[in-house]
Image (cartoon, rainbow, N blue to C red):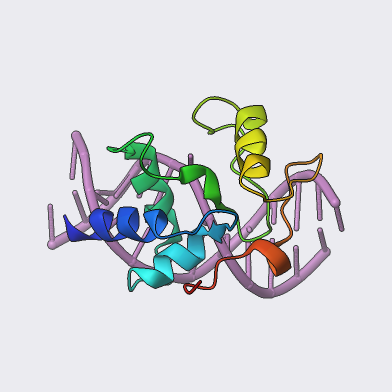
Length: 103
DNA sequence: TAGATGACTAATA
DNA sequence: CTATTAGCCATCT
């Protein structure tokens, strides 16, 4: 089970105030097309509270509303707390906050 | 081994 | 802008 560990590690590496898409994480682990498995890995979330799953969003810049750990409102608050601007529709400006794999 | 499932993504209407 | 279709890939049964 190395895939999951790689996903968790990549997600943890997302710097505060930044966000990454599932595709970015998938690419980071070596499987650019396995974006679904990234989401699945977060679903398992074996290190809840440690893995910043709230920083992982869709490629269109929308947060995973509906599957958020405590609620989309909470997720929005957490992201804003870290400096990420979230729109009323839970959309994020990827051009400004997207993590490029490097700080 | 094959079929089904899913926190996805891109293309099309 | 939203809705629908199809493709992808790791894991489960």
